[in-house]
Amino acid sequence: MKPFFEKLIAISFIATACLLFLTAWSLMAWSIWNLWNALRFGESLSETLLSTISSVVIAMAVIEVVRYIIEEEIYLPRTQITPGQKEITGGVVKIYVIIIISVGLEGLVFLFKAGLENISLLPYPLSLFWHLF
Image 1: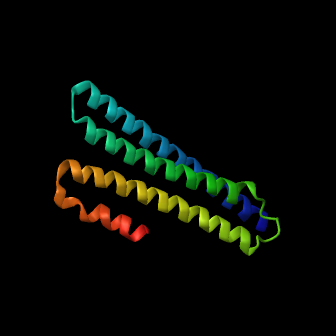
Image 2: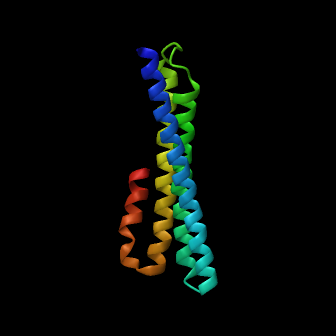
């Protein structure tokens, strides 16, 4: 019974990784489509570029999480010896680095958007930077 559940869990991780990967690529394709439409119809290019950067940053963070899922949950067999504290801590650090870089880049994009649109919106992106460091 245990091998059945291990295979079911592996299939669940594979399905989750595939779905996240396709969603991330769809987000990037959608942002490129929006950028193309902005260039074609003469919309505000600066806002569209910032939105594209924001979407691509989120998509790349999701792809990095997918890579982590594949490396840690699919490639490593369940029969392997339980990972030590060093391996577990390394995985957690990877996830935190992904989150910190993504939030930092999002804060930077929001900072530029606030500078373009309305200066009263600056406290939100500045609070993102403040909490990062």
